[in-house]
Amino acid sequence: MTCPSRSCVFRRARTWHRSSRGNRTNLCQCPHWGYLLKGRLKMRTKSGDEIYEAGQAFYWAPGHAPEALEDCEYIDFSPTKEFNEVIDHVKAQMG
Image (cartoon, rainbow, N blue to C red):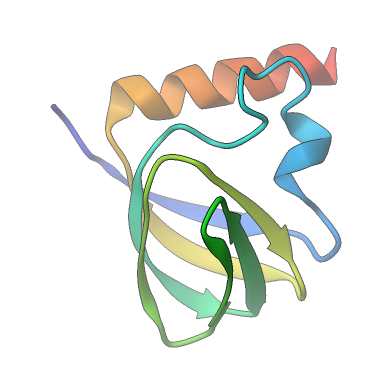
């Protein structure tokens, strides 16, 4: 398994649900490890919501849906295969 780092930007008012149409669970199935550099976001999971703020490290297990409460920037480490499957799905939904 390879887990390269990625610098990510997630804009305010963006939600995973807008990008996940057709996903079998409507939740991201890729695990993520990282550090939130800027902003705030709400992570929705089957067990409840959690708020993350700039300066926090995180682990998001498979089965999550982020919602940006502010513009966010973070460093992400995710398994390449699972990450690419998610990105391919999102791109397909965007047309």
